[in-house]
Length: 309
Image (cartoon, rainbow, N blue to C red; front, side):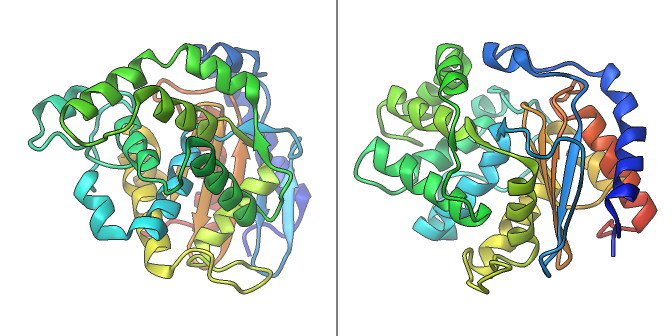
């Protein structure tokens, strides 16, 4: 077992928390500027129902790019892997998550992977539903099922703030539309995508979603196969190769678990066959990852031999 008590976890969080002073909260989305950079919390959810935690794990935060893994899982269920990967690639980029550079040199001009913004926008474009509201509601319902909490919703203030500052994502959409990778109204896609990123939860929810991925898509309580095993495998592979932006290679070497970060400070980890991890630490490094959250995962991985490699 990883940690047997909350006390063990508290000691690691206390040590990792000192690194928060080396990071800063995301400021390019105005609503995220309100984050407290000294916050750090973690929950670890085991298949037998045990959940240990440290820090203010009930504190809510928005998923941001963590949502990309979840939307990918749903679109794979909706469309199948062949269709999805006709429209978005499988390769790491080495570029920042919001870069347009590779799109300009690729033929065809499809995004390299679903974990960068361009790829995530294409994935969200593929969500099934008759209307914009239907598509978002299906995604939100999927998130609620994974987290086992129907009260989960999205933060309207954050979503509005993201819509107002989404010019780069709009540019990505227009580029993709020009090259026939997407074919819907850009503002409608931006509306769904910003709400997706603004879905709000706490570390306990995130750890449970991580556990579903860790257990090959099986709900730990009901035994239901929420995500087909092959699609859960694909998602975890992207988490390893692309989940931590352009720091994914270093993360794989130092920590070696499937994980996905978001610029609100969340990190979802899925240790295959063992447990799910939810972390919140809004102070970010220069790549956009939780600086203390990564340090905490590094200590956990080293102390308890978590690396897959």
